[in-house]
Image 1 (cartoon, one colour):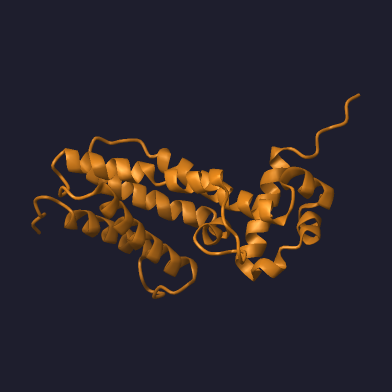
Image 2 (cartoon, helix red, strand yellow):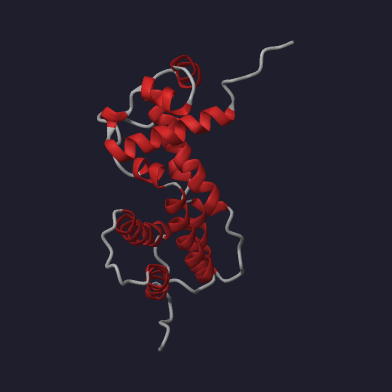
Length: 201
């Protein structure tokens, strides 16, 4: 009988998630391949077989974070209202960060000194925000948003959601704040600020 495959996709994802947890919680010194393998119940041979070494592992963690993030944004169906879609994408951003906080911190910080993502990881990270840029472009084409470069609006929205999510994940928001309602209100106010015709209260 053939030997069962042990270095499969399920193991690869377990290793990536655990590596992300170690890096985000305790920094690069915590990411020992021996400890990682032991935590997941496998061998260092499996880690080397799947990733090659620590730099390749960190690159894979970074790539996996943006793959999941991009998939969540692409999963938002178009409603026909670009402003509503803009808000829904912002909500999906937060959902992605809360679902994978151990990956989120690595996606937007220098998790390992000297780490530079590879070409595929860089491309995946860049392309992950394409649904937001496309939605902004649709809002401009429909005469809803002002005619500025779509990237300007997209990056400003990214700055707002990234800032709020980072504050939330780090426990820096006021304890009595209704985070969900405040987050959505901020997104809608930001969208209204880009409207060609300002919304009147």
